[in-house]
Figure 1 (cartoon, protein in one colour):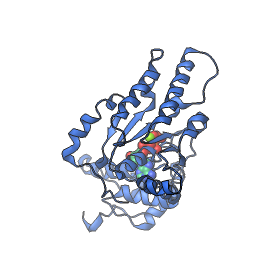
Figure 2 (figure 1 turned 45 degrees about the vertical axis):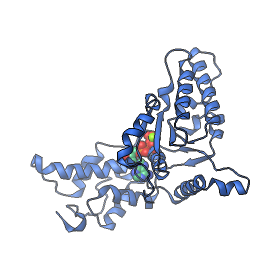
Figure 3 (figure 1 turned 90 degrees about the horizontal axis):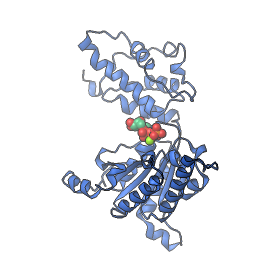
Figure 4 (figure 1 turned 60 degrees about the vertical axis):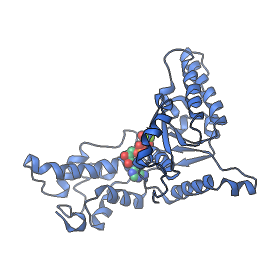
Length: 308
Ligand SMILES: Nc1ncnc2c1ncn2[C@@H]1O[C@H](COP(=O)(O)OP(=O)(O)OP(=O)(O)O)[C@@H](O)[C@H]1O
Ligand SMILES: [Mg+2]
């Protein structure tokens, strides 16, 4: 995908920011030109593309008596690209992403949370159609409704009820994201026009992710293959940290008068400092002897175009 249809030019940035001023007390405004395209499994990529076409050609759907879906729930492990995808989607539609950290709506004073949700949707009404709204980490408010009558649970239940009402009535495009789908309230789950699983990457996606983040280095395919094999179970975010960790070491080593003898030494140092969250299976590279089990790799990493 390209971003040729991003409609917001730099000169309009200030104008845009002032338009979204009210929304900004609850959300981060993410600009189209800062968006990155996530590398996704083909089925998810196809579903997202189809959705974009659907949004753009709502009239064609009207001819056959159906409406374009206006919302999607993205669920999957941390660091798989849910926020990145929402941002990319907004950019492809040429609008900003209003990213609401759902727990920001939760207030400590009683009754205030629902008021926050009301204020947010009120503010959104003024910019209707000019943004995609992301309710990120929606599980922080949309957990299954509690039946005990503690004040705190009552507050959350009331926030959820208010949110459901506003979500139903909201006419713009909106996306929810969670990495705890099992905890989500079923009523909230159903409110979304589609539910998309953004899962850990397969072999081909890991290859593409490693290659993307290795730039400006151009690793031989065999080396990327070996890394992709050894990183089964790693999220894209972790793959990015791994590859960027090596690049950071390459850049810093001369300043420290430090010699990195081979790829294994660089990888071993990075593997020791980043990892998947504890509830996930440990990828082979992070297991004992994981780095030692890699085949011999090209070192130093060659630069694209043969530069040094
Ligand atoms: N599918 C992907 N392709 C390329 N890069 C990715 C992908 N997924 C994540 N990344 C990179 O990892 C980082 C974190 O991604 P992001 O915040 O979108 O994950 P998330 O699924 O929203 O995580 P969380 O569940 O913790 O909110 C970003 O810097 C992004 O560039
Ligand atoms: Mg996220």
